[in-house]
Every structure is written in C-alpha cells, then in structure tokens.
Length: 322
Image (tube, rainbow, N blue to C red; front, side, top):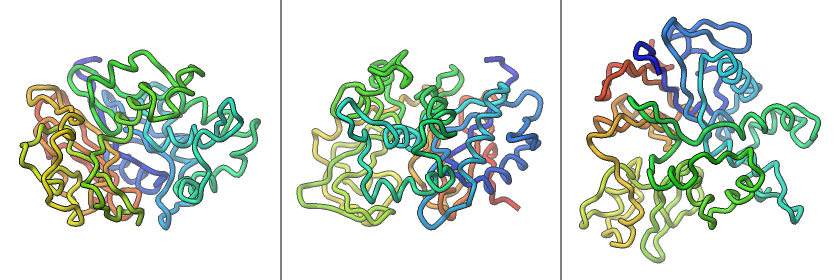
C-alpha cells in the first residue's frame, strides 16, 4: 500500500444505490459508466452486504446497480470489496449440496431476507443467467478480511484465531465452500464469526425480538472489549438494546470474546445496524462500525482514512449531509 493512498471505507449498502450515489458524490467521486471514478490518490473499500434491501425499503434495480458499480470499480483497480454475510447467504441460497438439497434453506424467512435481490434478477434460477454466470463467481472471490498494516477491515468481527484458521482459503474451492456451509464445522465456525459476529447465549428461557421481529435467545456482543466479570447482558450487547436483560453474563461466555488490543491498528467493520441517529463517532479510538442503518432509514456512511492511527470523527462522510 502506498503511503499517500487514502482509503474511503464504505459501510453496508444493501442495494440502496440512491444513497450510494449521494455518498460517492460527497466523497468527490465522479460517475462514469456503471461505477464511480475516485479523486487522485483515493481508493474505495466496501465492507460487504452490497445486496438484500431490508423488507419495506426497496429501490427497484438498486441491487443490480450497486453490484455493477462496485464490480466496475474493482475491475479498474479503484476499489476493493469484502465478503458480507448477505453475499455468503446468497451463495448458499443458490447452491445445492451433494444430496441435492439447497445449502441455505429456502424457507419464508430466508426468502423474505433475499427478496429484494431476487426481484432484481428474475433469471436467478437460470444457470446460464447473469446471476449465476457473473455474480456468484464474483462473490466467491471476495476476501473475508483485509489487513493493510495501517488499518484493518472485516465485515463483522476481527478475530485473529478465526482469521488464522481459514488463512489462504477461498469459497472458489469446492471443498472449502461445502465445508463452510455449516457453522458446525471448523471452517464454517470461522466464517460465521468473521461475517456474522460473536453471539452470546442469554440465560435459559430469556428471549427478545430483534429488528426483524424474530424471537432470539442470543445477542451480538461487543467483541473488541474484554468485559468485566460482573457485566450484564445489557452492557455486552451491541448496539444497545433496551430489551436485553441486565442478568450477569455467564462466565463461560467470556471465552467467546476475542477482544481487540488498544494499541492495534484501526479496524473498521459493518454488519451491526446501528440506530440511524447514531453519532458519526467510533466505538473506540481504534474500532469503528460503519453500518448506520442505510438499509432502512439511516445514512450510508464512509470513513476517509488518511494514514492516522487514531480514528478521527471529522473523517466521517454521510449520504445524509446537506
């Protein structure tokens, strides 16, 4: 990486090409063809989850336009893109295992989550169509994380152990692709944590409704902190949720939290759907979540990294700014 290169790190788009267009304009990028041309010395980095608008927030054609824009930028060398959990889910939704069954169950919940993408690609079940011929091979090549030395990026959780476990592996490898389709395998567990986060079980019988209305018995944890032994689930969850009880966290759950050293390079991630009104500030001096709910009513957010070791709130750029 050249020292003079600036990276514009962009949160989860989820097919909101309208917000992506606004954000790229505010970053100084110029629309050309399917994609956007950066300012000299700038490079874009997308944190994954380009696809799957949230139910009730569709932009017809937005998923296709987003994919084409990002791929065009990557092909020109103007951008990089990480794998998100929605790209991972989509790959398995459209792939069958040796037993002929879909690797991701095509139940009502999974279909609803993926419907915005299905609508943009009517040929999604045609092996000769654009979805299978262009987008599935492209998504399989997306990396799970990036470490540039000066900063790091991952879709959900920076976990050194899981990164080392699947180092050098790619979903282009049929054996790895099949193995990672189950979270109960070693490779599947690693991919699950990197792309979907560290999840901690709540006390027996305790459940809550998440943002989709689904009943859940576990929470997404603040993986960068090594919590106090007396902490409650309401303090461990990220982002904050008033529905989470304050019961003390089970001691064995702390073993799941990798932590992130306070002297490590800045790390950027998405995935966690922070409230739309969240301030444009990092979670810690070297930890920042850039998912500000662009998939719903929030802004699409980028961080313009200029080589700093401490994340600077003035370097945030939002699609919602006037």
